[in-house]
Image 1 (cartoon, rainbow, N blue to C red):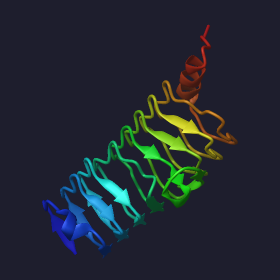
Image 2: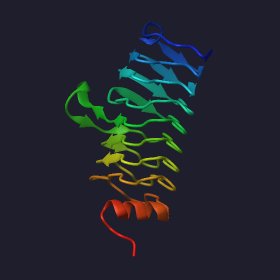
Image 3: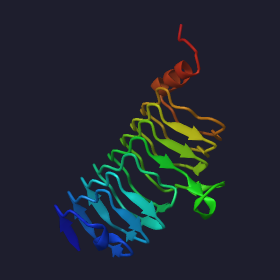
Amino acid sequence: MVYKNKIFSESEIKGQDFSDSSFLSCKFININFKFTGFKRCEFYTCDFSGSLFNAASFSDCKFPESKLSNIDFSDLKIKNCDFTQSIMTNCIFQQLKNGRGERKKFDLKGCLFVTTKLNGSVFVFCDLTKVDFQKADLEGAVFEKCNLSETDFSQANINGTGFEESFIKKTYLNIDGFVQLGNSKGFVLK
C-alpha cells in the first residue's frame, strides 16, 4: 500500500499493523502509536512531531529524511531500522522494565544512523554493536552504559558528546573525531 501526503489521525493508526507499505510525505503529528506495528515499511520525508509510542514496533523500516525529534523510544521496539538522513534531535533511546523504573538493554544492533541528525539525543544502556553513525551529527549527544563495540563514528560530529561508562572496543573514529573527543575531555592539541 502506498500513502502519499496523508495526514493520519490516531484512530487510523492505533492498534493497526502495517506491512510492506510506503508513506510519502505523510504526517503523524501528536499521535499515540498504541499497539501499532510496522514491518518492512518506508517513511519518506514523514513527520512524527509530538508523537508518543506505547507498545509499538518498527521492524526492517526505513525513514529517509523523516522528522522524529523529541521522541522517547522507551516503549517502542526497533529492529533493523534504517534512520539514514533522518532528523532525530533530542530523542531518548532507552528501554524500561515493565514500562517504568529499572532499565533493560535496548538492542539497536542492525540499525543505521548514517548522516542522521541526533544532536542532544541520549542513548542509555543500548547495544549499538556494529551500528553505523558515519557522518551523523551527534553534537551534545550522550551514550551512557552503551556497548559501542565496532560502532562506526567515522566523520561524525561528536563535539561535546559524552560516552559515560560505555564499553568501547574497536570503535571507529577518524582523526577529526579523535580531536573532538580529546577537546571534550579537556585536552588541547599542541
